[in-house]
Length: 325
Image (cartoon, rainbow, N blue to C red; front, side, top):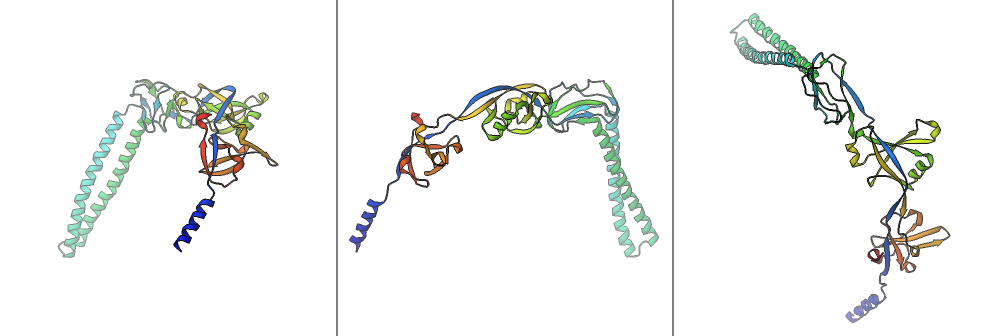
């Protein structure tokens, strides 16, 4: 019996088909220049910041183009008097807090004394009334402190978001009134590039035939609108920015390349034709797949030798010719 099993195993091992070996070439994407463009840096979100108080600027001047962070104090209007009012309000609030705690202890003792008939109901009511008045005063002083702190905050004008100053801030000693603009800031997190393209170029961009490159970084289209000059037939395209653009201010320009996307090394002996058109065999995770030539993309491993021996779904052993190509 054992000898029969061994014989069957030997026969199976001899008849089991070995994986077909195929040779592949990895497709590489290349770009050919269509035309060079000049894109303008824009910042859709910008804000004028005005003062709400009257007084003299006490902070140092900050130059145009300086980067600021969200919540950073940019301009301070003389606030010594307001600071003093805040300190007075805080002291009064702390005083009433201590007084209220003292009156609470007195009220607790009064409740105990009333229970043991040590004081009259009228005396207890008087003590309770004084406590409740102190409680109301504490709330009033708390609101007053909050009000004075809010007024102080208006003297310290902060950036609403991260960005760059479009204008310089006022110099020390400059007198400002409520409503005066003290600086303008643009949100650099929303910076974009704006450039003009023809309708045919936009269509090629949408199909994926064209791409926009800035310092070898692929730009992402974000919005399209007609050009201001309707006779030009051009369209305004807004795109993402590349890293180096962060150093530019809105209104400045940067070069962008409109390129044609090509697959540089599609081997002729890897392309096949049937009634459906041209196609290739690619290997992914050791398995053969059929793909239309138009569906080929950068990074695909195309079979250039041994394709006649395989079918989609076959497991194959791959020999890469990339080092030789």
